Length: 88
Image 1 (cartoon, rainbow, N blue to C red):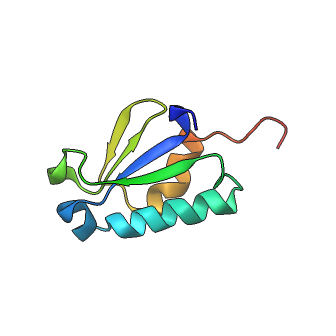
Image 2: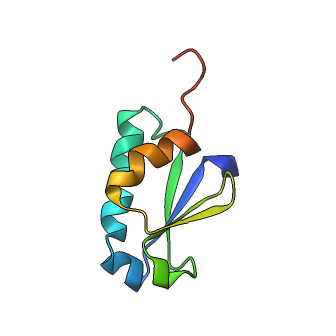
Image 3: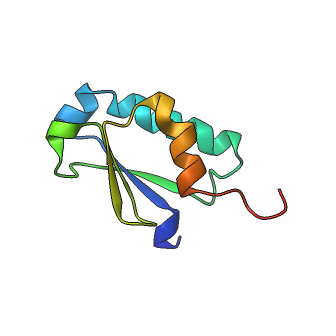
């Protein structure tokens, strides 16, 4: 997969405690709902180095670290990061 199609979700202690697992599940479900689960990869990583602002997600597409991401933010975040293919 090209790097722009990869989202890294922190699963480290602080992020896991702050709904990191729920964030991962919400991302996975939303990508499946959009039919993008085969073209966008979500990977769990041990630490993204920003524990004070957990949970964290790194978009490889724009190399941006998103912090304090809540499951309810997933739809809006994916709208920005993974635009719908043309003609859909």
